[in-house]
Length: 74
Image (tube, rainbow, N blue to C red; front, side, top):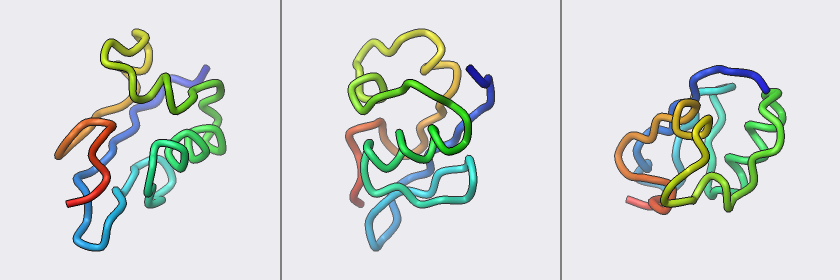
């Protein structure tokens, strides 16, 4: 699995969150998991991303800004 840092920025005024992987905007955990897969980070499901106590590499991989995985609207 690739070890690169992913930053999920705060929700925008129009909804969704910019994700620094490929400059994409995710509107849900599903979108984020698809973007990560396309970036070569395989095997992370919505459940993995939303876990209260995420598996270790998810916590090291993703930096959430302006709210955690359950915040997608301003």
